[in-house]
Length: 126
Image 1 (cartoon, rainbow, N blue to C red):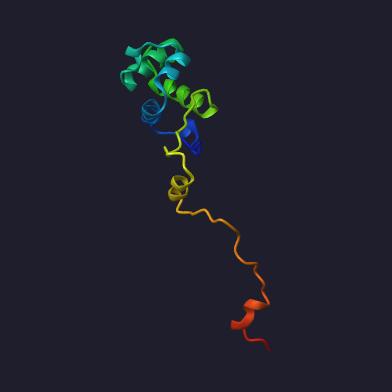
Image 2: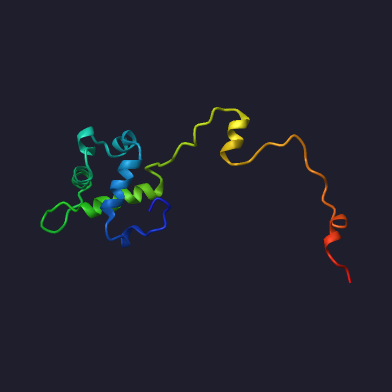
């Protein structure tokens, strides 16, 4: 779901995806988006129950529809209303440290020019 590869309405268990979003995303941002308190974010069930009540997501008979509330959260995540990002790895800032991360090294100059006529010594010409 994080890569937007799954259709929200065809998911069997949208609540587990919302649980992952609540673990990974910034709690302060979620509180601002949905106008909630800290107590509403203590677990996924409480969060979805509160959200379903605010957005009038009920099943027949007046029961809270947590799946509909979860799909609402997933739609907001997919549209970008709830942001998710990871910070790049921490480096010391020197070029030597940066070059060690990717397994590359910095070179002071370019190598010799490639000439296919000089390198054809291994090829047999007919």
